[in-house]
Image 1 (cartoon, rainbow, N blue to C red):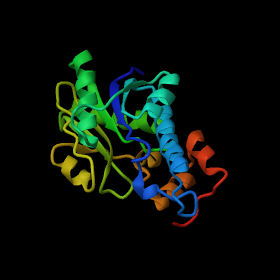
Image 2 (cartoon, helix red, strand yellow; image 1 turned 45 degrees about the vertical axis):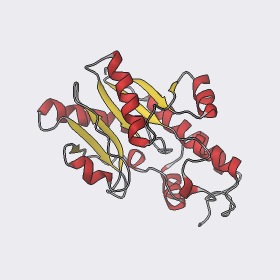
Image 3 (cartoon, rainbow, N blue to C red; image 1 turned 90 degrees about the vertical axis):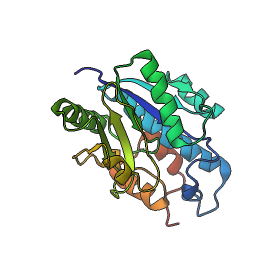
Length: 223
């Protein structure tokens, strides 16, 4: 199987990331250092799954957080600072532009950084489904909706096609305007983590080792 796709994963400043998760693992206390550890662990597990996927050729993480850059850099991940425009979609555009500057005909993808139950095989399967859509000519972009069906966890654009990310609340409907929804179970790929309930659902699927390590001394409790 070839390495078919180049992916962008943005990671916010850890102290500002995942604000709705604050306190989810310490009875609502929201201790800043623990919260930052959790946000970093989510990113670590997502990135590890991407790097183990057989159909991903290259990964670039977009982050200006020095801890993120250091932690991911140690394991060989390319981390690039945010561009001049702030925001999640701008980060995706920044990463996609970098990847396309290296290979204008690459298939470029955007993946959320909070997928701690993601399995490499799920990502490979979703990439395969998207490439089949592109080959069939029915669409030039494809996306994976989240578990609720309203958000987006994964977006791909065919060679030469702008990524055009529209992440955020209600993004699935916005992406569906010009992208094909991907059909597949892929529970880990669909389970992004924004709230304590999301974290419990991801725990039931099976967390990656970094997130599991943060939660082990402090089991998930109702928020």
